[in-house]
Length: 138
Image (cartoon, rainbow, N blue to C red):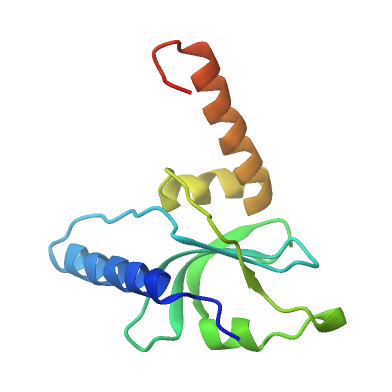
């Protein structure tokens, strides 16, 4: 099973290279997640920003549905190999896009208890801002 398209892999690798360069230069690097992986049978969700040169190690925000989310590294191969009931596996949300950097997702997910709640809250916050400011095209 292939979770990541070539374009997504390219973007994740580019972020990983930028993160490495930023670390070497002592600068912060806080990209927006490019990929949302999820379990169709639970609330487990992974927001991914980087793919290591080994082609397997992903970096991002992992929420296994236990009430907290953690930044870290996880294995693409292990996610692809997961077999869930009824023949399901981990899926990649087509068309996922966000304007919020990983640090915002992490902070909000730690406060709300989940990545899914964070997604709802960030969407509502953006809608409220757009509704209250007539200068913002919507």
